[in-house]
Length: 128
Image (cartoon, rainbow, N blue to C red; front, side, top):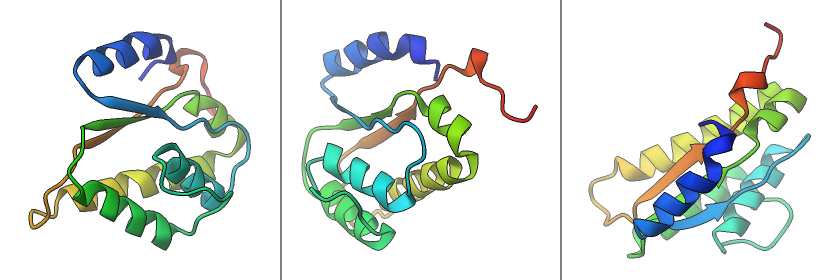
């Protein structure tokens, strides 16, 4: 989603009673550091790195609990793509995979968690 709409989207989500958290990633960030940033934004981790297995486990527990619906915003995603395209997509895929696997499990009551990647797509070009 276009980063220029971030404030309006945030206000609409909050008005709809979604809890909104932001994960800021700029420049080169390892996969473990990215996982830790997401967990930290959710109040689930306080260290600079987290392995993907821990990331998945903590999110599974978080989404299994009753709680308010939540949206995780990733502003300035284009900056990360510009600095490390492969790792940025790998991490984006990791987040989507974990949340989708949790949401598809019908045996657990699930907290609603959504994610939105914001970028300045009009000015983004990478090897095109």
